[in-house]
Image (tube, rainbow, N blue to C red; front, top):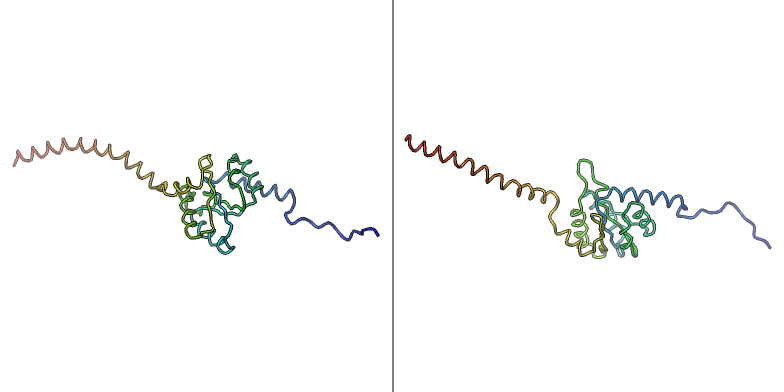
Length: 191
């Protein structure tokens, strides 16, 4: 007996090639706007822990997404960040700095991103940092730990301004010292 067709074909759950292309384009747009990307292994985390992690990172200007490696790899290539592909092994999630910055706050920098995720790895033992893409280069998990220990961008800027300002203050002090000494001598003479 021959098979009888009964109704239309059932679509696949993923939405097909068009839906995947849209997802790659959306990921590529997010990657293009990100200052830095840290790739993590989330194996062992419960859904509630992942949601809480996202809530804690969002105010810092960090977006945290579980991604499919093949689609994220294509998005990385499309956004000229193909080096990220070497970090995509096993179940991965990515943290993007500068994408979800709240209104009124500048985009998160690389140090804030690294510091935030390193702090989270201390509380969530199952979360593991695999590496990062910062400044056009792929760095290891140990380098991310080192990056987290650096002072933030505002502290570095303040240090630079202080360093530039100190010699100028010395010059002003030397120039005013001659005048103040002359005034003191004249005041002592008149008294």
